[in-house]
Amino acid sequence: MNPKPSRILSVDALRGLTVLGMVLCASIGFNSGLPAWMFHAQTPPPTYAFNPEIAGLTWVDLVFPFFLLPLGAAFPLAMRKKIENGTGTGTMLRNLLRRWAILVFFALILGNSYDIWSTARPGWCANLFMMAVWGGLFLFLVRVKNGIVNLCGMAVLAALAIWKVKWFGVGLDIYKSDIIMMILANVALFGGLIWLFTRNTPAIRWVIFGIVAIIKALDSYLPSVLDWVPDLNGIGWCFQMEWLQYLLIVIPGSFIGDYLLDRSRKNQQPVFDTKSTAAGLVAFAAVVFQLWGLQSRHVAIDLAVSVALAIAFVALMWKRNDSISIPGMLGFILMIAGIIFDPLDGGITKDYCNLSYLFTTGGMASMMIAFFIMIEGRWGIGCKVLVMTGQNPMIAYTVTQFLITPVLTITGAMGLITGLAEGSIFWGMMQGIILTGLMTAITCLFTKLGVFWRS
Image (tube, rainbow, N blue to C red; front, side, top):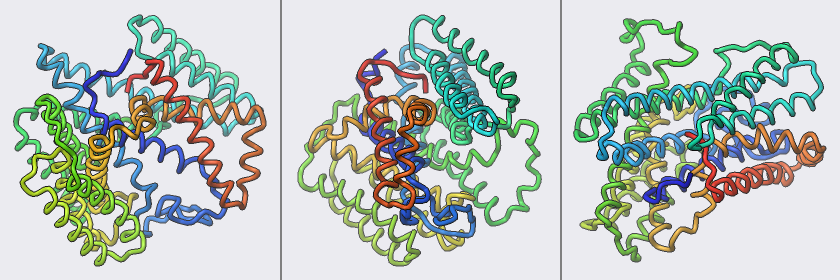
């Protein structure tokens, strides 16, 4: 089934860039001598040990929030037309719950597959198992009119679960899940509910955003105030209250989705002249500058330059009805707020996630949307590969670990690549580029063929 013709391509492009970054950062050589900014700020080389005391921001730390903002933008793009065509609130609620259940199931499958490497069985058995899991997921998630295909996928996955327990001797555990997908499942549910019930009252949605921010601030600065919150450990495997903090990125994304959908329906196609092009480049420059300012901890300089860039952006967009103005301005507001919170939080950190991180990265993601809109409007889509990858995120997310790497390992190619990458910066980077390139090629092929997974 082909994607809807009314898709906002800049949103797909940012999602595609995120997936490429996600695969690249997980595929580069970890013992090749690559610099610290090529890894999460809090897991630097040479030990790669997690240290929550390290403050800073690298491009790797942007991957998750850059995925969350397009998730929020997709709510109006996916649901508004259905509602206008007569789909009732009850049906929309069931759709959101079904999507949540699919993503939770998906997260559990991934998490219960990763531990297959802990068994004493030969490596080729584990690789074949991972490939079989991907095949089962393909049948289960592929968008087809005939539901029998999806049922066959469920049967394959059930058989693989039995194989895992009986042959590999590893049990199933609901507490083993892919944490990224589990968080996405919950913010997709709650973010979707918030948009659904505030779609015509954006002021209330901003109030909810403020409430979430206040709760996050209390949890960070006055945690004892929230001692009355009930313990939810019983359902901690599928829901944790702290995951809702990411709504501070998702909710702004929903406003951007509303704005872009409204412009698209009004067929407002601005002429991208020198000023709008410059504004898009200013937004991009602000994003890049954060990676130096916050990682090198020159926070005061970063704030001053960011404010100057924000003023330049507003000056370029002054009294202009331009599609990049709202995403760009919202992005600057959030990003500057995040920089201001940096010293209050003791420095920006992804884990444990603080307000500085949520505001800063949400703002940066919003400005990247503005940048991609400029690229799309000024020069046409020069980001086709990113768009095609972003339209098929579930395939892109899984194909490297569950298909590409097992095939390369069985054929011996993976051993050759990792051997070259050991102690070599060039080959350490090439390892990531090769795996990311293969993922992109396979994902784009499926997108071109019109084969999509539910997401």
